[in-house]
Length: 402
Image (cartoon, rainbow, N blue to C red; front, side, top):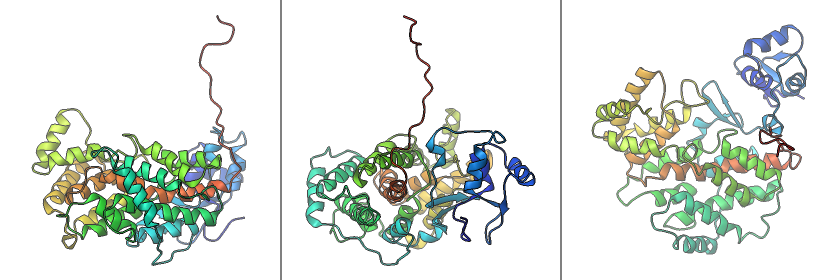
């Protein structure tokens, strides 16, 4: 059944990717009566019924690309289309002026309620802080988040209930608990306020909280990224929420995912006083300038655009020297290499512009992505369990050769 709001419909690009053909071939299938194209108000181009595309994907008329259940994950959470990021059909940039609590509830339930609040148990928050106090003083924030998640889980005996109502309740409490454990203030603070306490010094301009709140919303989900796929695999085994979050944290704990902003931060640190000189040094070394381009977006990263727009607003108190240096780099790199800044660049700029902890981008990414991971777990709990069994291709020594 198709819906007027576009549910269970694929764009031309999505249909082409599923069939393993070019977009032009999709329209050839339409002309041959193998697919039916549909137009929806406000949607550019044609859309196609997902079941019809799946049926065609099983025929010899399309080039099959089956690799198991992985490429047949259906989701109603996030759409990336034509340079825009949407959560449940709503532009994420427009949602970024709201609190993370409200957006999280919307991503989990489809209900957008302003003023959504989650309450942390102050006893659990203190237990988490006690555990974090035993860690090395210079450890990374993602290590602290991982420990806080594990400690919090031990106080939730009903965490094994994977019903949607229970998972939503647990996820809200988990988010606010971990954020409060990282922060220095009251357990009654909002998630953004607690995170701000964790990443700032006393000299940081409090107006930066506006940018942080937007960053948390914009990083909440990004489709089937590596960590999200890991979360769905864990959820397919019916792992509880805390375990699936741990699976996601394990996946992002690498230089190509959650820590991708680290080299950008190091580069920008050297570039603040002399951006052209830093660029020249980077190019002379033969290394690419970090923080530009994206594997999904082709000409703009909407998350980066919005965060950089906020950083350029004088009323929000970002260091103008840092922002000016970032703009010089953006102009030079974009013009010379026909590319664009991504969210890693924007988060690193945000970090330097407010004098925040160096691992702030990783902190923001990890906490925010708990929202998306929870939403994907909720979807996966409704699927058949243990459906991810991708066949491997054995290339080792054949039996009987010894």
